[in-house]
Structures are given as structure tokens and as C-alpha cells.
Length: 312
Ligand code: UD1
Image (cartoon, rainbow, N blue to C red; front, side):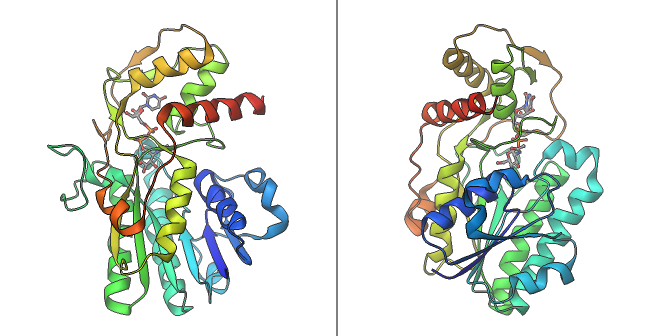
């Protein structure tokens, strides 16, 4: 295998893609990350196998030479939070939209083979029916959802107008080892697991009956590699989920069981921009990309909990 670039490669999902590439025998892996939300520690096991470049996708001149000639660019760099895009919309807009444009432009001008883009299920917003299918009209409810959708549209336009190969994967609430639980903008399961280990009650925004199709990070990385080599998919978008749906109340119950504790959650007001329910139809991803998620929610959570325990 040849030359790969992972933007956001020091992040939670990006670093998993880097490990998967290294495992598959990739010859050259360039990681682009500005370490705003990523950590070099996430790359510890593969440090000797990669070319780490501290660079910012907001700066075209910085990233263009790093992307030139890549076989595949996995574009994971983003500010990946709905509430952060509401509290502080400017960096979110600049990184998620302008940064994505820069990556696509650099890939096109540098004759990269393909861009696999981290899109978001938040683009669907609230749909009348579940599961959510790729043909449903998008209905973004937050700046973040809109920004990720614009990136997806840009992928389609770069494919259609300039012939750059692109595939967009709409991630459904990815969780797993290395997800950073330390910010108020962190993914809910990382916050739940940290609360459990520290014997604290989590705060659930709303009644806790909102649901998510939580997807284990190794399954997402695997799907990225499949999307990198699938035939006849350029310009398209696919759901990257499990096909299931778990409420926050159910998730906290499982966390308590796994940790052997009993702590009632606190409930707060619902969060602005929140989607109520999220569940992926994975038919197209299975058919066209060979998507085959391996981890049940319980198994994924066991592994994630184990990892957080070891970090302490
Ligand atoms: C998440 C991702 C986003 C991705 C999207 C679709 C994160 C940080 N964000 O957004 O990148 O594009 O899924 O896959 O992973 N909640 C609580 N208590 C908390 C934190 C959150 O009740 O302490 C609730 C939220 O209000 C929400 C749910 O948990 O209802 C999930 O929130 P979050 O983990 O932030 O993810 P999404 O907003 O769904």
C-alpha cells in the first residue's frame, strides 16, 4: 500500500484510522494535526511508522505540500461538537468549512487519488421516520450540522466538476478508547464512563429518552479503509452507523452495570440544537462498501471502560 494522509490524525477517530492503516501495511502515513483537540499521545504505538506534521487545515500553504500525490486523504480534522459550534461559531465555521475546502483543493491540485470525508449524521436533523436513509432531505439544526453538510456537498461538487474521487461517511455518534472526556463538549459516553469511574452522577440534558446509534471507533476506522478502495462510489455519501438505537437512560444503566454502581443521573434542560433520535440505515454502506460492524454496544462499552480504567 502507498501514501496516505490523515487530517486530524492525532484525534480520537483519526488516530484509529492511522493505526488501522499501519496494521494493513501502509508504506507512508502522513498525519496532519494542529493539536487543538488531538493529542500526540494518541499516536504512541505507531509513532515510528508515521510522519507527524503539526499543521492547520485553515492554512492552504501549510497543508498543500503534505497532501500532494497522496493515494488517499482521510479528512477527519474538525471541531466535532454541536454545542461548541453554537457557543463559539467562528473557529468551528473556519475549520469545518474553510478547512475542508482547503483539503479538497489541495487534493485536487496535488492529484490525490481520493478523499474520504468525515461527514456527520447530524446533517439529517429530526426526521419523521427512523432509521435515517441517505436519500432523506437534510435538515441541519445547528451550525455544526450545517458545516458538516457543506463539506459533504463540496465533496460531491469536487467529484462532479473536477473529477476528484470523494466518499463521504456520515458518522453516527462514534465512541471508544481515546475519546477525550475532559471537555464539556466531549461525547456523552466518554463523559458517562468518566463519571462512573469517579463515582459521580452525570448530567443528562432533557429526559434522557433521546436516542443515538452509538458506533464503535474500530468499526468506523474499518469502514474508512473500505471506502478508500471501493469501486464506483465517487461523489457519494453513506451512513456510518450500526443500525441500532440506544437512549441515554439505557446507556447510563449499562454503564452502572458494567462498573457495578448505582448512581441516579441528574437531569438538566434540553440542549439547544440537539437532535431527538438518531439511527442509521446501513443498507447502502453494506452493499456498496462492504460495511460489517463487529462490535455490539455492550462489547464496545466494555472495551472503552477498560481503556479508561487503565488510563487512571
Ligand atoms: C455527536 C458528535 C458529532 C457527530 C454527531 C453525529 C461528539 C462530541 N459529537 O453529536 O461529532 O457528528 O454525534 O454522529 O461525539 N448529553 C448529555 N449529557 C452530557 C453530554 C451530552 O445528556 O454531558 C446529551 C446531548 O444533549 C445529546 C446526546 O447526549 O442529546 C449526545 O450528545 P453528544 O455526545 O455531544 O453527541 P451529538 O450532539 O449527538
